[in-house]
Length: 246
Image (tube, rainbow, N blue to C red; front, side, top):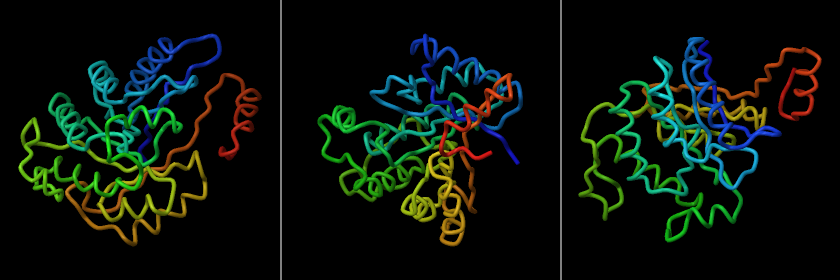
């Protein structure tokens, strides 16, 4: 079993966002020293609790300060963004740090309606209803094939063809599992949000279609981890989290 970590850059009491980002950097280096497989960064907007709003900005900093751990997004909320820009960002990151970059994609907004509206300013293709179309375009831009969107057929992606980042879909619902299977993506189940989503693994495996991203089903499960020097305190924290089992 391979062990990885995802960090939301939490802002604890009596600290601030700057401190949270510094702690994320320290945690990434520590995970690298332990030999963990991956270190992912979350995307949250308009939050006073989490400082991580832009994984693609933090990724190169952490990759440059670590040796072997894979660094990626957990995840980029594709509904807000241009698939073309996401593809270029992560192809460039893959060029800078070969075989060490993961592009984890999310279908949720990662924000409330106000922040989602600000992120969508000027765009007519935001919202979950556009996810499948954007995923098709992103797949084309990453692998260098013609886009299924006619107006993008002649678009060139920079940098040119080479290795592409490892692409994952973050999943907490049946529809998400169906998307992961349809597009042939490795799937990361959000067990920490809803433990019952573990049942989606069979649905995913049964319907998986091999792709440029993966030739066979691949599943990871995300859980909350509490580390504390005192067992009683750690159990108290765990019992405050409704999705954590002991």
